[in-house]
Image 1 (cartoon, rainbow, N blue to C red):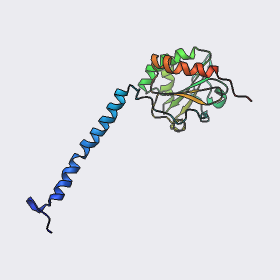
Image 2 (image 1 turned 135 degrees about the horizontal axis):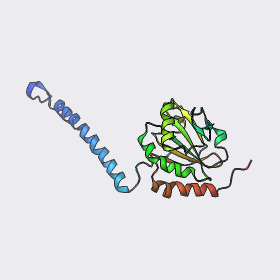
Image 3 (image 1 turned 90 degrees about the vertical axis):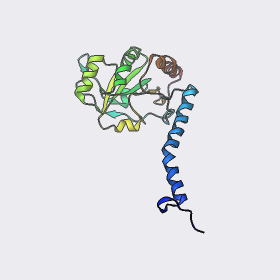
Image 4 (image 1 turned 180 degrees about the horizontal axis):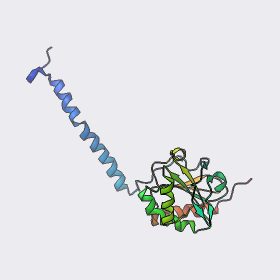
Length: 206
């Protein structure tokens, strides 16, 4: 049997394949649009990406100090395991170049006023001078700050993009993750209930 040919000697099947491939981008776009719309009408916050680290021990901390960051005339400590051990701790990943970090900063300052919570920071891929200027302008909520110039620590913590914040309980277990900047609603409705649960839980026996 001979194949049916059209203009220029092209076979009909070949033209059909070319027509199909021309529609592939449209099909992909439509599929992505359906997925996005489904998430939108579900009412779920699309920023709530599950973390495989929740319920597991926090990664080890051994990060150098942000040199020049002072509190009451003393250098703010480096971020090590000793700074978080046995404490309910918020680990906030931030940078001076991160606009959402600036937006959430007043909320971190308010949280740092709560003596039950230990707020520490990982300064991500930042210049020291810019980080110092950022905290000098907006205030320092952190009891300890470690620098992560190459982003290696952020990889260990499974960071998607900054800011991200982890709540670590007294046993060193990650119990909550905030992706993106905190908002007043997120602090009230999501973070504070987790803090209250962590406060009520018994500490690990030695």
